Length: 268
Image (cartoon, rainbow, N blue to C red; front, side, top):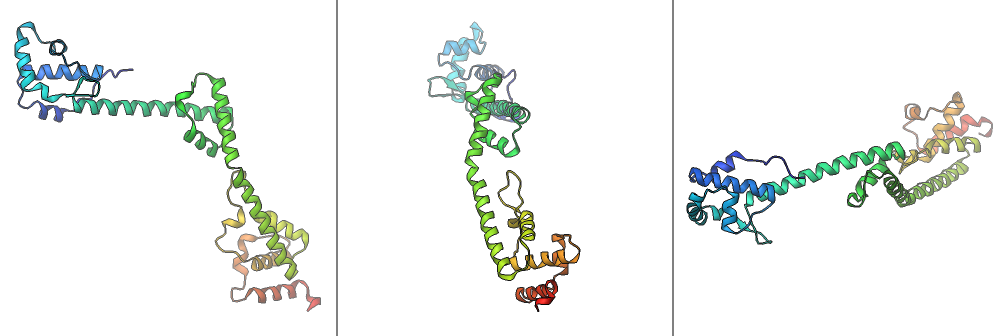
């Protein structure tokens, strides 16, 4: 669809036509406007005179002014036709703007469709936006659109399956190491170890890390010791408060010795 109006930069126009006479300026303006409309201009002088609205009595004057002045405002393009360089850049920028605006509108419709019809989450939406080929899809055909979006969502889930597996593998490694520490120090029962693991391995569907991995520091001995102290106190786990009560001057070995003495006084 052609633009109903042309961008006209006043300062550029005044500078470019500063030394032109009124009739030259009028002919030049007509030619520029026809380039905005058609994209480029013919090279035939009579056709140019017609586009410039040159009167029969002005034709010879137009031919002379064309050679002297106006001709130098245009260049041959790769199709053998004439175009003004400034007008060409304006036309190209407008085409790019319209293309981006049209794409934005289409993407907005697709995102709404994917969220409402397919219940796509934010990560799947981003994958769709990055990978959908708008040139090969008609958004008015909802059946086809539905199939395309389902296919993209499936691709996203397949590509990210390895990340999910990786999380599960890291959780298994964490569980194995933690059980080994607990077995070596006899701090928690099997039931409490399972509770501890359930808490620290929690993650949502699309997470790339689990709760333990969000911690900036970690010492399994100290964490188990704090858990043991909490359940000895009132049976309620207060993991977010563990640092407040912990004896910071203790080594892990000293803390474990103290905790075992408090939990199992008969074994001293």
